[in-house]
Amino acid sequence: MSRIYRRLASAVLAVAGLTACVSSPDTAQPFTVAAATHAAAPVSAPQCRSAALETAADRIVRLHTETMVAGLSCGNLWHDAAAPGRYAEFIARNAEVLRQAQTEVALRLGGISNFDEMHTALSNAEAMKVARMGATAYCSQMQDSFYLAVSATPTELTRATATMPASMSALGSGC
Image (cartoon, rainbow, N blue to C red; front, top):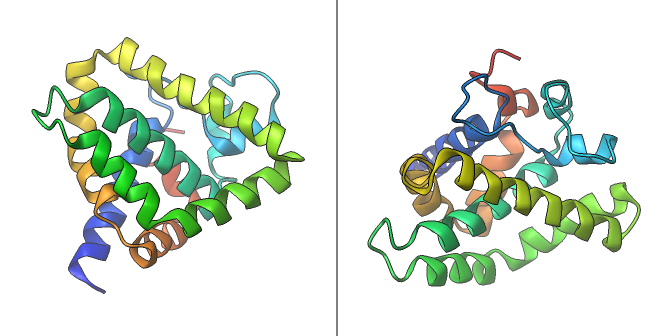
């Protein structure tokens, strides 16, 4: 297993841990793709059980969303004006993997319009996490994961999300 692959898998797990159900008041409750698949409204505590239903495609969509929010929200705090550009390069380099994951989730949700609605809710939930935690705390937690994610090749991204057990989404959450 390559060193970058192990580091990326660790980053995926760390990002999953950030979105897992945690009781700390300064950490946002997660909004997972699996939870959105099974509930029309944003989910609170019961979504911890839904995280175990996440597929690799769900994890790719979630990682993509978290990477987007971190890249757009944290560049200034990281003193990295290129963070949004790094995110854009990640999108271009991994376009096919991201498109396949989005298509899989969209089919399960009943179409692209349902996917768009879910993805908007997921993005908004991540942005609210920034607001609740504060940008400094959020960006501090996301920094290593962001840089590992944006450096991933399609193969590394696919391997890291495919081999991560779905139950790892709730790692350290007490769920």
